[in-house]
Every structure is written in structure tokens, then in C-alpha cells.
Length: 253
Image 1: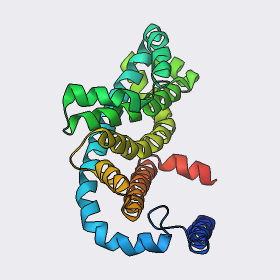
Image 2 (image 1 turned 45 degrees about the vertical axis):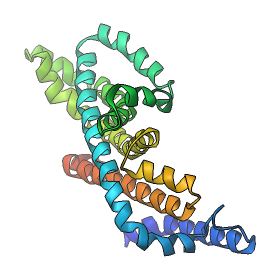
Image 3 (image 1 turned 180 degrees about the vertical axis):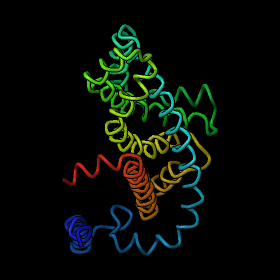
């Protein structure tokens, strides 16, 4: 019952948006090659689904591999920055500056350096996902209970023991918050990489559909991209509930 109430308004809003879209296209006599109606997209979707799934598995593979690589690298760097304040002060500004560079402007370089295979897409995804994870973990570790840290120091705990027992557990809520952002970005990053050069994937499928003015196919691919992003978000949310049951219980209270 609670879940039904929770999702009632999003479903109503999306339904109203689709009906308004349908009405504007039909009443305005907008040609299908310019803006297809939702009913046109849904009519085309079943026919395109096998092809979309074939391209989608390459996009998903690049997204997942890049996502995992970003998580591992971000965790290592966050721990090193926590251990060394000098390293944190030196690297953190560079991380912020790196986010001012549009990823689409440097992605062609990866195509030149690494070719048209899977590797440049993985690199793009890793770069897109890295920042939200490393920042969230770093800030979460900094927000750990200082009294607990001081107590462990008095008891003779090593730096790694303090990180393991206090700082990393304290960073879990922030870590999963960053993961949710990075997870939705991962699919987008893979699609961006495929836009710039690929033989398979949803990005190249969308590019070909756009160039041929087959916008029903383009919107069908957008639906798959959105569904994959939502799926990753829900998986991360489920993992957070398993690994942090105490946190979700406190939020309910």
C-alpha cells in the first residue's frame, strides 16, 4: 500500500505528459519524421526490440566495466587522500578542475589512442563515474565520528584499522549516494563514447536513426537507455538496503 502511494504521483505525471505529447502531435499535425507520437514509438518498439537488445548488451558491458573500474579507483584514491592530507590538498582541486572539461571534447582523443573497440568507451564511462564516487567517499570519511577515531588512537589502533572500523563504515551512506549518481551516468557515458565511434551499441544505433530521420527508432533507443539507467539505480538502492539496513531503519523512524 505504501509503495502504491509512493509511485502514484510519478505514474500520473508521466501518463499526463505522454497524453499531452500525443495530443500536441495529433492536433498539430506534426509529421512523424519530425516528432513521432508516443503511440508511433510504441508501435515501432516491438519490432526494434531484438535489434535494441543486441546493441544494448554492448552498451551495458562498457557501462558496467567502466563503472566498476571507476569505483575501484575512487575507493583507492579516497583512502589515500584520507591517509595523507597533503595528497588530498594537492589532488582535490585537480579533481574539481577536471569536471570543468566536457567529456565529449576529450572523448575523440580516446578513439585516436585506443581505437574503435570497447576500451575507449570504458575509459569514458570510468571518467564520467569517477568524480561523484571519489568525492562522496572522501567527504563521508572526513565526516566520521572524531571521538571514535580518537578512542581507537588511544587504544593503539593503526591507521588502516581506523579506516576499516570507523571511516569507511561512516562513508557508506555517502558512498551509495555517489554510486546512484555514477550508476545513472555510466549508461550515458557509454552512449557518448559510441556516438563518437563504434560499430555496435545504442549510441551508434541512435546516430544512424537520427541521420536517417527514423525518430521512432531514436526514441525507442532512448527508452532502453532510460530503462537501463533506472535498473542500475534500483540495483544500487537494493544493495544499499542489504549492506546498510540500520541506515534505512533510522530514516524510516
